Amino acid sequence: MLLIYALCICLRYAYHLRRWYLEGKGVGNNAQLIVEKGAIPIKIVIQPAGYHEKVTLELQSTDFVADLRAEVSKWWETIQVPILFQE
Image (cartoon, rainbow, N blue to C red):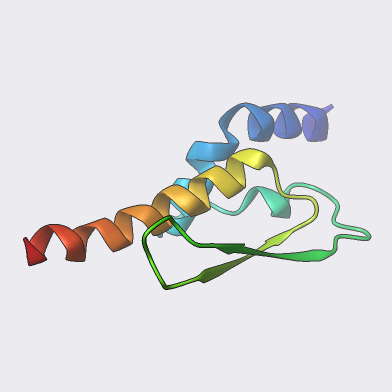
């Protein structure tokens, strides 16, 4: 029962949990709560329009779409800061 409750919390707050994990706020990754038997690493290459730089994100096949969204949001914020200071 406790595992089902933890999984429901993960599904509901997956984006925020991943963001806190990426920001180092002491929150564990949701993959720790899921049995990762047979999880396959996935590499996702992203390149925004107008940029020559490509970035590779490494996720697991058990990660949620919200995890991908959090990873991309965090990455986008990190490239926006240098751009704002250049102007």
